[in-house]
Length: 296
Image (tube, rainbow, N blue to C red; front, side, top):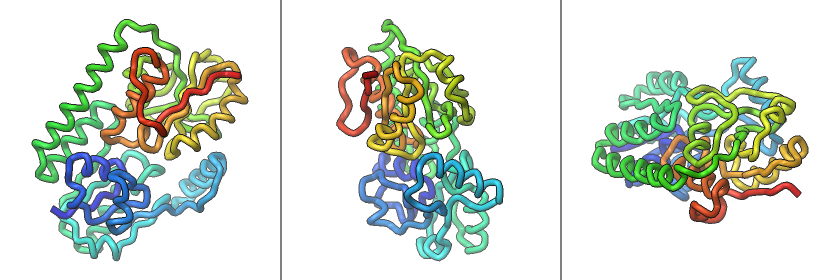
């Protein structure tokens, strides 16, 4: 089957199912399986300029949304040449990936007769369901059952390890300028990692807040998980949080790979955060995933 993945999370799922060789098109953000965007045509790119600060990104995104401009660009010629049988897309967040409506319009215009699967999980359980759905659409249901079973087993093991431990009060931030409280599966990730999430809407969208309100929550730990950024950038952006909450421990995490991307590596992210919160109970993850920054 020829699979076009227009969503990094879907590309990750396809790779985890052992179907990377079936991919015929990916996006500029697809980095899992490693090296996939160097081996396959990139049919989705960003419409945003490079080199912006978090505050500048927020301003540009808001401006383009207000003017009805897209955040992403679709290479229709490359998609047509890929001739996919299955197209994986999303309609969860127009800021995070190409929206389903743009994909549907392009497929109609290009006369591409492909099955389209829209992957729109809002919760951790729905992410696991999405893994199974991609497996079914790609005729790889047994591989999907095995993968989801392994992920659920790891989560159950973590629940057992952390069951009787004190839970630190955790404020997760998905952006720092301005600060955004978490949505969708992130509060659940904090809870499964042995923390008590202080704010955010489970299954809902992330929402902006004020630093005064963040301080009023009196967190023990702030999880710095800026959407789309890796660990080094999260550590750098933690300096903004440190200015606002100088006496609170910070946990910076590779959010792009392990927090905001709705794929199998969310479980890796939960395990990494759990180690940062409970280092004496949960083994350290591989380097590059998470870093705890104590107050000076």
